[in-house]
Image (tube, rainbow, N blue to C red):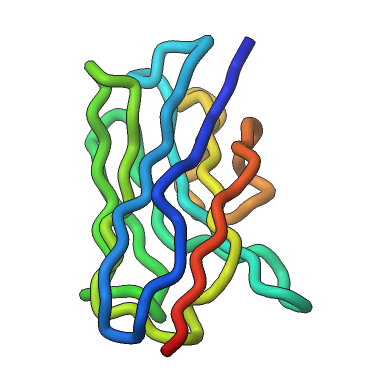
Amino acid sequence: QVQLVESGGGLVQPGGSLRLACAASGFTLDYYAIGWFRQAPGKEREGVSCISRRTGSTYYGDSVKGRFTISRDNAKSAVYLQMNSLKPEDTAVYYCAAVHSIYYSGHCTPDNYRYWGQGTQVTVSS
């Protein structure tokens, strides 16, 4: 059974940092592209950062470029999102998602991902 479990969310002051983790089980992470998405109240779910399986190429949304870093550790079946210089507008529920590389279109959009975690809340506030 494919399962993704996010952790590491919480309350942080503007300018602070958080590291989200996504633990994968039930499948071989090495064969999958992984993405981090977020959804704020009243807004659509958006792609934050994605990483391919083959080349490890990465994508970052314009709003997080230079502040967030995605990484993966296939041996540990884990994917991470390091978030620095956090802003109040980064407040959202963050989800990790996976799709087998065979089906990966290269686009970091929610409709291209098949398996989803339950999400972790990130709140940036003073």
